[in-house]
Amino acid sequence: MKKFLLLLAFLFFFTSCSNSDEDTSEKFSVYYFKDQENSALTSVSLNLSGDSVTENVQTALDLLYSPEESDSISVFPSDLRHTDFKISDSTCTITFPTRYSSLATKARVAIDTALVKTLCSLNQIRTVVISCDGIDKSYSNDNFVLSSPKIYYSTQTVNLYFANKDFSNLRKTTKNISVQSSKSLEYTVISSLFHAPVSPNYRSPFPSNTSLNNVYISNQVCYIDLSPEFVENAIHTEEAEAVIIRAIVNTATELPSVNSVKFLIDGNDAYGFSYFDISKPLTDKFDSGK
View 1: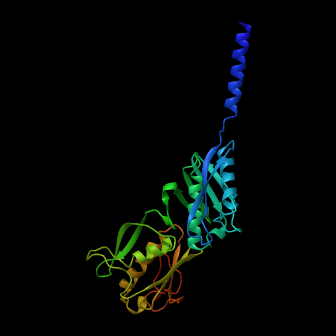
View 2 (view 1 turned 180 degrees about the vertical axis):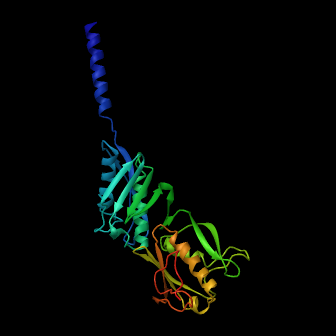
View 3 (view 1 turned 120 degrees about the vertical axis):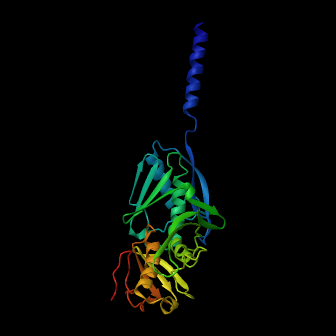
């Protein structure tokens, strides 16, 4: 009987030790650039064994900055690192310095995509908030879709402002858009204003034959570079000029990274409106220049 009890005790001890040695690490994916062209992302599956979600997030961030595999390329420039991160429930808020906002849009898209998809592959994280200079952008894993060979935003809902048929008032509509990384979100939104809904009550705020040269953001100012037809072919009444400007400015400033709009004509300060000074940054609240 004693031998039997000793055998049971030995088996129980052996089983307990075996269970304690089981791999309790968590599998997750870290996203890097696939090649030197920086046009596509690839993922590497790794294990985490931290005792807390904070430790696992820190490890994930360290791996994002410094890949273990020699053929993996970090999406982060060497001079950009987070300044802080906080976790509340299943949301991780990552704070970056101003350097982040000064990056080209394509670079920010790649960073946002890799960061969100990496952290959301952790079991404890469902939402990632990217914070910089007081502006917060909240994402989940579903906000980003990878489609080889390019990085795509998933469909996003934006508000667009058009002119009514006689340029006496604004018409607002909501549209779902998809943004390819080769075209920034702000470029795609502004270019959407060239195509008014099929209705006699909606007209593009851009005068006929106007071309969009470029759209970019710097220090929360959205620079919209247009061809000379923007001024030459506009309706130069106070009412019409106000509608043209407000439609474009209202649309742009609803983007979280934009506080004001600066119009350019072929890369230079814009002039030529009769009632409004379009050479300076404008918000959705502006006064007559006359």
